[in-house]
Length: 291
Image 1: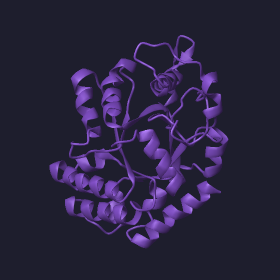
Image 2: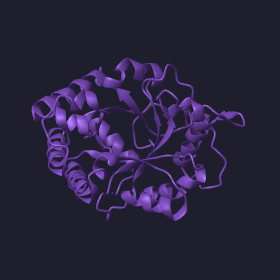
Image 3: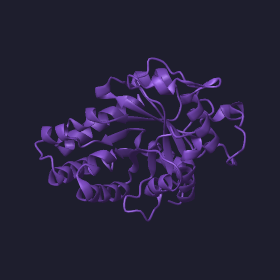
Image 4: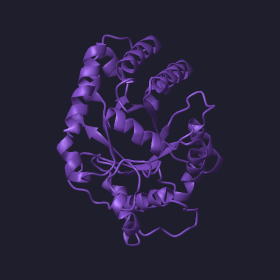
């Protein structure tokens, strides 16, 4: 990975649009496709999705849990899929939501090393053991040109129980956003104070080389945006489009013209197992987002 993730993401979005499609081979969907809930069904499902979409969308987001449930053979399926997807030009965001401290977090962060069997472009992580818990992942990402998407303000029903709790004068979610914004500030080092967001105001909402390699996860189905993203200087992963009720209009309402990676899973995957139908479903979302 010679270029930082933020640069590669901006290039992929410019070429293919911002759509991210989740690869979520849960049992019900395998059966819906007429496949068996075993490694053979998992491989067939995954191969069809990658064949259909890896050459067409900017980002593919496999959910690690659905491969882990099949043991080492399931992970072998994912290894092959990640390599195939990246060769076809899609960026791979491994949806792992890892969060721990010290050497354990460093081990999770190895997914971003180019010599790892599951070498991905970016990784989702959880911040709830504190900002310092993410440092091993941040260091690994920046050493190898990878990216992180940190859970900040999700839209599941009881997310606000923790995410809206106050830490001094800021919510937990806002503290997460501000932490990631510091990572994206040019020349920032651990321990430096937060830079002034106003200094970067003219860059906000623009895809380009300036876009930082680290982003946050903010749900596309929130009733309103209750975090300030002006100092983020990086992308927002916005899950929830389609089957969960989110729309392109919600993205505009919540995020305006910020650098957003909208994520769709079921609304595309239900079009399978036909490759052409999967591609058509993804293209429909790409066109809607472009409009």
